[in-house]
Image 1 (cartoon, rainbow, N blue to C red):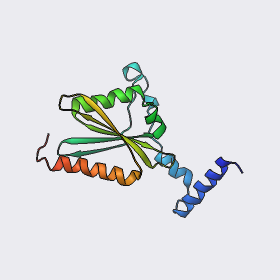
Image 2 (cartoon, one colour):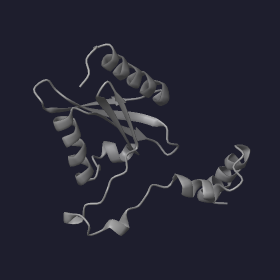
Image 3 (cartoon, rainbow, N blue to C red):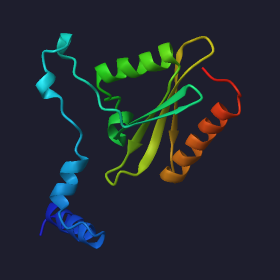
Length: 153
């Protein structure tokens, strides 16, 4: 049995252990929307982007984008998405978390995009040793900073 067959078998075992009786249906429900039917509706081949996650607190926004860790390390964020996220940060004062995940979907690093007081984009990269806990802590600190200011946008 090759490695891929072993992984598929393990996946099925894990699904059944978790009570999923139809793993294919589960996978299809998790697949991102494709917007190919809108091709040509917008200039330059633009299509809608999916939003992996977003939080609003007192008028401040935190946007999540999840990518494979190798894509972040190699700088392979699609150009259009990168420009869009940069505009959210610089023009709308969003904080963007580009979360790098491993093959198991565990967070391994994060690029934090934020606007400086001078209105410029700054990116701070953090590597995780305990990804979920560290991402939780990072989000908690962001939420604390936005709720303790007493200000809203």
